[in-house]
Length: 93
Image 1 (cartoon, helix red, strand yellow):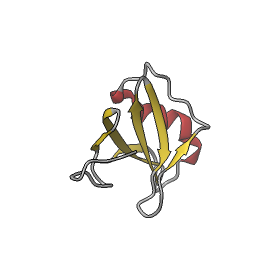
Image 2 (cartoon, rainbow, N blue to C red; image 1 turned 90 degrees about the vertical axis):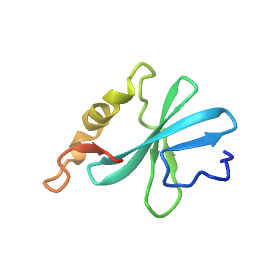
Image 3 (tube, rainbow, N blue to C red; image 1 turned 120 degrees about the vertical axis):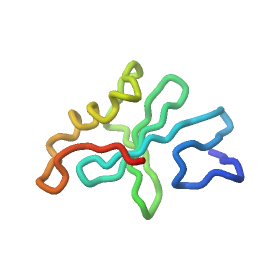
């Protein structure tokens, strides 16, 4: 994926060849993850602060899920990883 000269890893929006893609970042019970809407499909990624972002193929996010519902959806999928320190999924800003 090519990025424009002004985008960087930590920005939520970057330009790609296919157009504008928004990267939405979450803390999923202590694990950094991100979601991207590409064409009509949500794609989930492990998104560590250090290292390479990797796609999660085991979790399918339904295309009709709204952006505002992603936090709850990820909470429902990954709730077994909840701990006293990380009791819920939070959107990172």
